[in-house]
Every structure is written in C-alpha cells, then in structure tokens.
Image 1 (cartoon, rainbow, N blue to C red):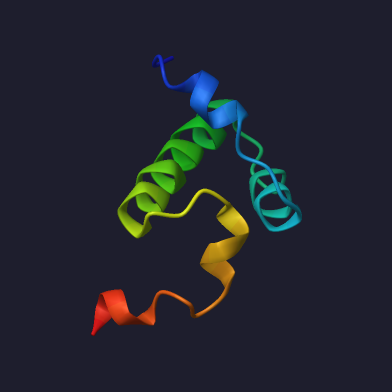
Image 2 (image 1 turned 45 degrees about the vertical axis):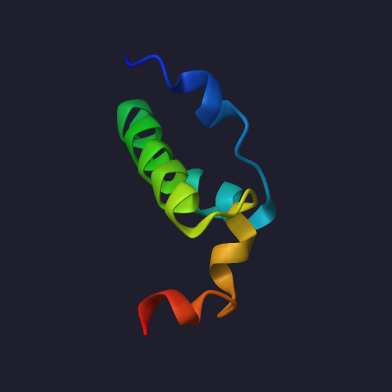
Length: 61
C-alpha cells in the first residue's frame, strides 16, 4: 500500500462514506480515495461533499 493512506483516512462526510462503503475491496477503496483526493486538490476544495454541487462549473468552461 502507498504512503498516502494517512491522507485517505482524513476523508469524511456522508456522501463520501456512502460511496466508499459501497466498495468491497480494501485496495480499491484506497485507490479510489486517493483519486478523489487528487481531484479535490485540482478543484482546490477540502470537503468531498463540495463535489456534489455545481459550485465549480467555471473550471470546465
């Protein structure tokens, strides 16, 4: 497992937990969580729940 597991452990929120708890494989959970973290860095957000809203539409236009 990679060193980013500490960062992944910091992810929280109902939306994130609903998503991640639907995945059975522990290694897939870690990989998906890492990808979510990277995408959050790109969007410059700190809460995964913020991805559920259209507040970042300006990035894609």
